[in-house]
Image 1 (cartoon, rainbow, N blue to C red):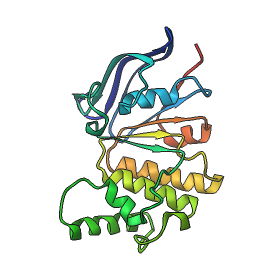
Image 2 (image 1 turned 180 degrees about the vertical axis):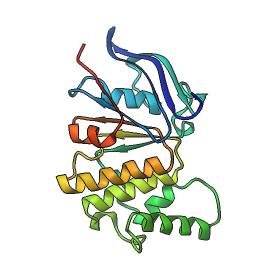
Image 3 (image 1 turned 135 degrees about the horizontal axis):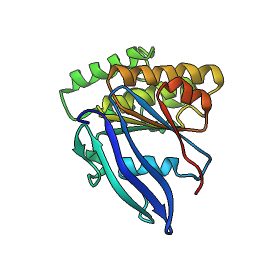
Image 4 (image 1 turned 45 degrees about the vertical axis):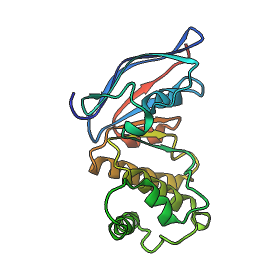
Length: 212
């Protein structure tokens, strides 16, 4: 598979005990959902894909992204974006500065500012560039976090329970926004969640991890 994300024969163990065993391919614009109880290894799998797995874990297997082997690449070179349940916006930066942080080092200041403004308008936050993140609602923060991640031009998107802190109505709205933006950019998506509605809304294959 040239395009998309492939986890080939991935086995993650800790203390000699296997936690995760998975072989799957995620095509561009598709979502693979990983479900299972806390502690079963869902977030551990995401950490392996992002290159941030703690050294106490033993891993075998290979990660391919758009045909390239990124298994041993440093995190900043993997082109993998991730959204967590917390928005992780920088509190000392304005909304616009948060988005500028996500931008790659291309273009002049005017071009970069225009890209930030376009990104905010895309998610219904036109004119919010100078706002303090602390003044935003939970849904607005989630939208800013999404666009900051997308401005970094990832080739794959990981979702680590990103909707779990939102109330039911907002959860559906933000979830639809994330999935639609990922699909429009042809990003393969790997999501971990406890929530059956999230899994159903994703519309792709669901893998359930069980305690070993």
